[in-house]
Image (cartoon, rainbow, N blue to C red; front, side):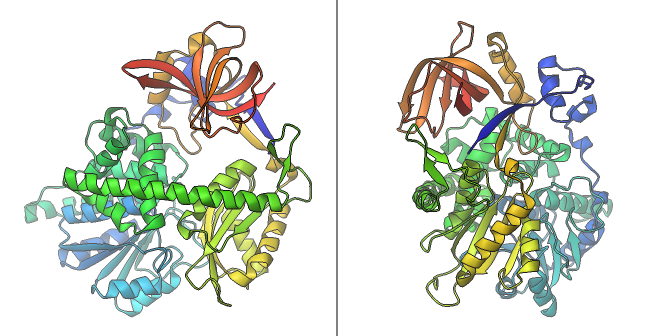
Length: 591
């Protein structure tokens, strides 16, 4: 794959936000922040919940359920956003006086995603009066209709893109539904239910419910650790509203005001609570919670988030850590299988230095579809992400949907990941309209989606997908572009500047952590654990040296020249009480 480093250039007349050093102002401007008010991330700056279509009706349903002691069942999703949404709903509703509030999270291997009729039947055994979906439901036409036929009221809270038809729920809250004026279309599922519950708290307060029942009015800010975790882990764009939710949640975590389960996972991973960053939520806590939904049952992750006792939370966190390691092992084996398939498809060719390089032949696949009968359904999304990052092409990974993978009517589950310029859900919608017989069901976002197809249709689906990809993309779209905030001199690579960068976030999707590029002299190099490249580098023309590391490097089997160009993120490495500047290398190339 060809990769181009491109610097984020600002127009000559670009205004810079006042009140911060130019070093930071340029970085902010490159991300669209030019007003001081844009840097205010207080709760008072959150968007008004009244902009959410359906929120008033949702509150009415919940007030009815609480006042009349009705049974509420929360139906969540089996990822981190779904787990945090479920835990938040259980905790907040119980604190507001709900007498009977339980949850069901579908096991992906038995029921699949969303409020299916089968999940409704399972919920019905608990005799609920109200089902509340969190992080799902907008595509659950059959499930909602089935619940209604059983006399169960349904409140859908979701953030996924709706199809042409909406479920006939009693209320729907989704910023992406037609007619919704809520400006943050990027809200995660946990953000949506947070807004609904905050509105409920206000309604109960206005009705003097807490006084009448002699219960403490819950502080919704106490749940922002869950909102921050779910928002980061779901990789939604960090628009200003999401940045406020994340920043406020991280502040509470750093102050120790977080769920015992989050604290236990961070402690087990040797992460400092007081220095926690958004990346710790995305790369440490999130994957461990997700491992439960991928390999076992997300109830384990939800119970960890609901745990009140520290010792109980630590035990659950340890089990999540074990599952995450198991997930890594499965992923490693699946990745080897995938690379073998890609070589067989002539995706790779041998380059002159005997390393694998991407074949640039115009006849090679633009859209990648892979399947193995023994692949694990819970890990296909991660594998799709890994291959997408390596090849910079839309990727769909399939695995058997159940144990009857050898039968004539066997079904496959697919997980898709996309690149900039290719809206995955819209592409699948186009494919489904052209070939309605190929897709049993699908849903998702621009950058990620899920689907089901018949095993016998895999080749036909792959061919149809390839045609759609080639229709939408151009060859230049297949070149990966890595963005840099420019070059830093040695004196700018200071502990103070790097600390200010860390505090200037939160960084995340579409508000990326600053990265820089430059030419360096290689002073030393060595290999760690057979896959990481540890370097000592000196900026070209300067004498100061810096430690650097590239994790899972493609250069471990190749000699490095004296000078290289790298794209890196500076961070502060603490070891044995000493703090030093370290460069985290995202891309390395010859010059």
